[in-house]
Structure formats: C-alpha cells, structure tokens
Length: 527
Image 1: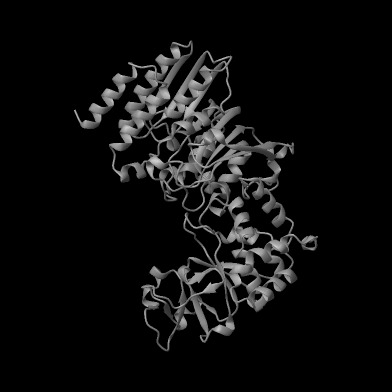
Image 2: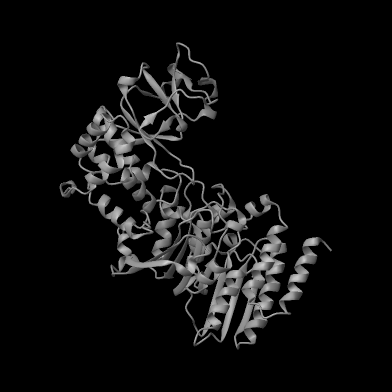
C-alpha cells in the first residue's frame, strides 16, 4: 500500500470516530490527495481546493426544497456538496431527499469522492435526509454539452462548483463540443459555467467560484451572450486579495463567487432587478464581508448582453463609474483608432537586430513603455531594432504622434493601465516597429496633436481610469475592444489637459489631481 493510500485509509477510518462535519472530512481528504500530487498534476487538472469557509458561504446561497437535484460538475473531494447538505440540514424545513450527481475526471480522486459521499449519506440519514449519489468519472463538458447544441435538459435544481481553469485549444474536443460559446482560445472554466447553466431547471440556483475574466473582453463575448440569456445574477462576492483566496495552493488569481438564478430570457422582461455585491479581503474574513445592493441594470446593459459585466466592488467604484459614464465621447467620435502592434518577434526573427545600422529603425517592446514616458533604448537583451526594407514596411508604423499602451499588466501591479505619448518631434527615424504586446492610439489619415497625445496618456494613467477599467475588466490583458468602448471627455477638455500636463516637470505627479478635477466639472457631460 502506498503512503498516500495508507494516509487516506486512516482518514476514512477516523471519519467514523468523531462527530466532525462531512465537509471537514472532505477537506482533509482533498488536502491529503493534493499533497500527494506533483504541482504539474494539480495544475493540469485544475486541482485547487475550495477553503471550508468559502464552501460554507457558497452553500448558504442554495435554497431549500422538499427534494433537491444537486450537481457538482468538478467535485474534487466533495467539500461543496457536503457543505450544501450541512446547510440544508439546518433549515427549518430540510429536504426529505437530495439526489447528488458529481463529476470528477481524476479516477483516483473519484474513488475518494465516493467515500466522502458515502460518509455524507450516513451523516444525513441520522438527520432524516435521504441522500442518493451518482459519481461519474468522466469529462463533464463532453458528457453534458448537448444543451448548448440542442434543447435544454433541465435536470437539476442547483449547481455548485469550483471548476478548473486553464486555457485549451480551439480544436480541443471540449471546445468543439461547446462551440456555441467558444471564441479564440477558451478558458475551460467558462465552458463549465455555460454547460451547467443549460442543465438547470427554471428557478434553479447557480453558484460558481471562478476567475473574473469572463466579465469582459472579446474572448468571452459569445459566452456572456449565451450565459446571461439563461442566468440572472443575484449576488456577486469579490475577493480583494488575489493571493489569499486559494493560499494553500499558491494561486494568484482574481476570483469571484457568482450566485445566479435560472431565468430564461430575463433580459427581455425589462424588470427592475437588483444585485447584491459583497466583498472580503480573503476567505478568512468572509463572515465579516461588506454588502450592498445596486441595480442590476448598472452592471449589465440589457440591450447588450455580450458587453462587460461590470463589478464595482466598493461604493467608491460606483462613484468612479458614475463620473466616467457621464462622458459621452469615445475614440471613434474623435476620428481616432486603437490598434495592436504588428510586430510578432518570433515570426520575423530575421528582421530583428541587437545593434543599429543604417537600415534599422527602433523596435519598441512593452517594457519600453512607462507611465508618461517611453524609455528607449534600455538595457534589455531583446533586439531593440528592426530592419527597414520593402518586405518589412507593412510591419512598421510611420513616424507620427501616438499614444502607446501596454497590453498586459502583472497581476501584482498597482495599475492596470500604463500609457505614454510617442511624439514625432523626438524621433529621428522615418518609422518605428511596435511589438505585439503594445496597443497604440492613432488618427488614420491624419495626426494626433501633441496636446491630444499628452491628454489621452494622462487619462489612461490616472487612478480614475484605472479604477474604471478594473470595474469593467477582470483581465490583466488590456483589450483594445474595451479601450474603444471607454467613455472620454470632450476633445477640447482632452487637449486642455494635455497642454497642462506636457509643461510639467513631473507629469505623472499631477495626473490624478487634474483628471479628477476634469471629471468633477459639470460641463463635461455631452449630449
């Protein structure tokens, strides 16, 4: 017998020797199993254990019924299922019977899940609740994706899950099976959400803890359109700390808990729904969470369900949304576009150069762009030049005025948006190469003025815009689609801001104050 098997056997035996809750036993079994697996196995299987406090909180969102058909599509060691039964057993009118369907693709873990659910059934029987269980050791997406392609199969009253999250290829069989909600390279957790929502009966409870990235961006657009046609959000819980929610697994991720109800076509009803938003630092202080109610229409545009699902985690975030939404301008209104840098280095290695010569022009990478400053060349080992010849002209942008923005930010960075003006007068080259991890704002067929470039860069670097972006996006990727949609003040106000900022010795030091003052001016509202 392996050390792991021996340890789990002791755990199983000890479960009958105490009055510990079934969820505590499930947590011990899950932790023992996770500890026995290499990090790569845990990552490839998305094996990130739900903390007991989070499991209990999620379970509290499921309403009691006389009989309950309960689904967990990524059950692991079963802590969420145990937490649900424990919570319902304390209800004034507990269910007579609960039918549990639990999917777990890891064959060995599925065996331990069966033991955990057997223990749960014995515990529930002592409290007058009949538990029937069905553990399915197979891929949930492949087994249940038919509702996405055909008619809905309303087999469950509630679904609760902490699904795996990792990207899969578009040609992956799971992506193909869930093709109705797939765009680009999908993250598998969104497929779990979409398929599970299609299996719920009307009025059914949907409770998932996932990354927040589905809330915005073009890659999740098809998912949002499908999902929000089926599920109406009732509550969202936001964890302020990215590091602490799954601290046992050393996961750095921005997680949210979504509580929704199956309400097909609710967007068409135009009713005045509300949403409860709660927040805590991490799992340890979830009982001391801060809660408030807002209008659901403030976070989901019912006329555009594939748009962003905005999550103002705190009252000050609502104020940020109010201020920025008061502006009616946008890049397109001012004849501006935002594009992605055309140079993909690994595809044009023969054009890259470490040292300059008479045939090279600058190649700017993401790390050259700092807030309100382009620092090129710098000490990087990456090639900082690209050859300017006929076959490379399509990869270069002409020397002109631009606003450069990083397309990605590190999860631990204090600001998501980092922008700088790139000015024609400072360049001695006819063109410049922009690497693919940069976005750039430009005026097709014309030129950004210096004041426009400085003003836009100031806006994007401000705390106000950073806060707005965080409300609409859970991604560390700064999507050009989201930037196009962000409201802007009148163009003359942007020009005035830029004129002021460009004459400052330390432009970044005054940006927040000036932008906040601009947002407070009643004349910035456009019609």
